[in-house]
Length: 210
Image 1 (cartoon, rainbow, N blue to C red):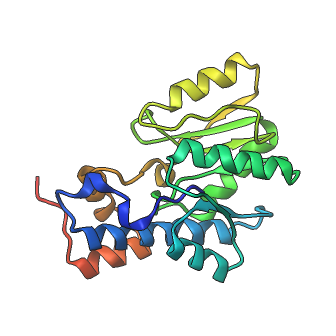
Image 2: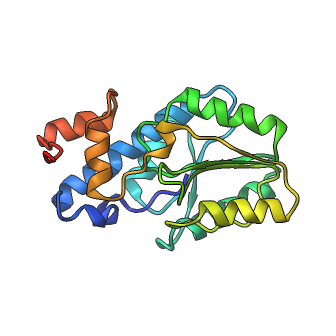
């Protein structure tokens, strides 16, 4: 899981959240995603890529591996670093998820892993089918990953061009990544009990009425 510094994360939410609230939100979402991963029984290793000391502290407390990066170079570069490190360690399959999908559950993780038993590539698109919110690769370096707002179709086309067995999963919990105020409003109205929801409640943040 690539993790940007909490203090500089989610700047597109500046219009609706103060800097300290953005930091709290980023940390809460990270904890939610990490919690789902740690509950998934079929993950042999969990690793984060970050330089954020708070994220590192949270991870080490629960024996999650840390791949340190010297600077925030973006999700694509962080995942490339993890791919190299994990490949050197002999990891055969890699699951990549971002730290801003707080609704993800261990059942979602298990469904992705299960789909990967019969596929080289498993892609979970964002709710708008533009971004890629989870990807499982066997082996980890089988497909070059380039993340961004329009990464899903390029990933799919690249996998098919390489002749890789590819499965697409549409998972609502994974499909919602929180980047913009509209995403935050959707999350706030979602019937779930997460750390992120608790933080939003503490902030007394409410989705604007339409």
